[in-house]
Amino acid sequence: MNEHKPTRGVYFLANNVVFEQVVAFLRSFRTHNPTIPLCLIPYNDAFDRIAALQDTYSFSVFDNTDLLAECDAISEKFHGFVLGAYRKLVAWEGIFDSFIYIDVDTVVIDSIDFAFDGLKYAAYVASHSNLANIRQFVWKDSIYETHLLTRPQIEFATNTGFFASWRGLLPMKHCIAKVNGALELKDHMELSCMEQPFLNYLVVTSGYACTSLLVLRDRGVMPSAALEFWGGSPDARVEGGKLYPPYDAPVFLVHWAGFTRGCENLGEALPYKELWNFYRRSDIPPTDFNRDVHSPV
Image (cartoon, rainbow, N blue to C red; front, top):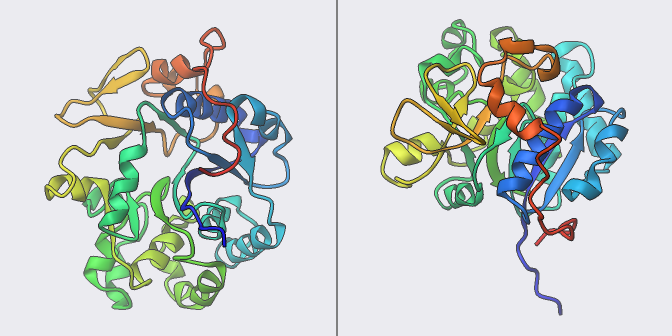
């Protein structure tokens, strides 16, 4: 009998529209994480330019079209049209026993290995949570009047551009079964943030423990945990491929949520664009990472 070896890896979601962002994401990720397996979740069928990068950046492609179609059907119930962002739900049905999901409006500036340690303390680990200024991007003020969620469930509110979890925690059949309950709260969701309210709903009503790297760091559980940094925050300093925030905590990734119309079209308006450019520049070759990481390790 073959003994199963637990696997771990990282998912990202993309199509050709965000090609320039994907290049910056992949180059930054592979520079600092040369061997961890990566898997692309196609945002829609137009991803041939992204798929062409497979050999350069060593990633596989999630190809269960039935599961992807079920995600599309869920998105239609909330938005009236197919929205590929909901396809990140397939991560719980993927190839990795433990996984991290990362949006491609991100550059990764350090190793992400430490983030898997958060799964010792909760089944779902976000980057930041329980911050009043994030809740507005998940729930409208009226959510409190429904009394369908507890205050702690509402105030967990987290950005779903980064999270770690376990395979099978939220299988597709569970997500589908939760849709009707979530639709009762549709008018109270900030649906301009796409799948974020529904995914928050799934997590806080799952019965599993959820937390964030910020909470684990602040409570002294993971005191050396690095944090993410939002590109809209002021007063950070960029040196080469690193960003140093105006507070005493290491940063392992920088994301530009809210600036997602395509970094290539934002001109100098993109905050900290010099960091994005550092990883986008074609004259900087990727680190000579191991090319043979298509299979999970």
